[in-house]
Length: 176
Ligand SMILES: Nc1nc2c(c(=O)[nH]1)N[C@H]1C(S)=C(S)[C@@H](COP(=O)(O)O)O[C@H]1N2
Ligand SMILES: [Mo]
Image 1 (spheres, protein in one colour):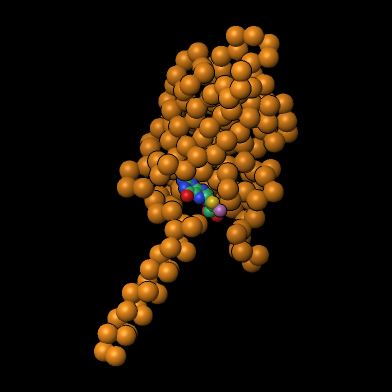
Image 2: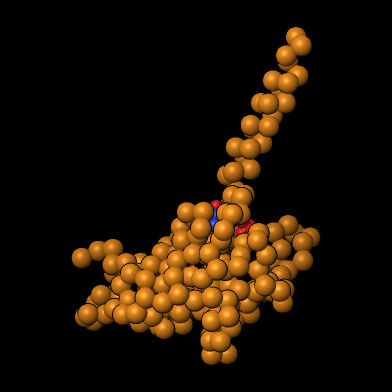
């Protein structure tokens, strides 16, 4: 009987930990300060927040996203189009049809990964709002998601392809 309460507390703590893990990955101790662009590109590059700020103004996009809860205020996100970042690294296109077989993999310091296709980014309106983020509401990204993150503003639910602590972008041909 005397051990019941501590056990209950332990069980509740574990249950909370498991459910929290499902959505709220803790911030990694050392999130990347630069995003590395590599794989099937002519020139592997890496970009810091300062590098992103220096992109051409027409490639820097501001996006207003609604808050997570219905009554939460919207926030304004600022970033460079992933399309422009990939153009700087120059995707390898040995022949006319290669690009159609490319996946673009965005990965985070905690191992989270999401995938885009080249066609989504370069031949669809979705690509207009796939951004490498460096600012929220006029401030640098906090440790909750930054210093670098990625978002796909036209997704139906923007949570899943909101890559916090963005670390790398890899271009990979996924079919022959
Ligand atoms: N680095 C990283 N980013 C991540 C995740 C993660 O585990 N690690 N989870 C994703 C999932 S599944 C969701 S729903 C959202 C939740 O956070 P948000 O609502 O603040 O975007 O973050 C996404 N981004
Ligand atoms: Mo999620």
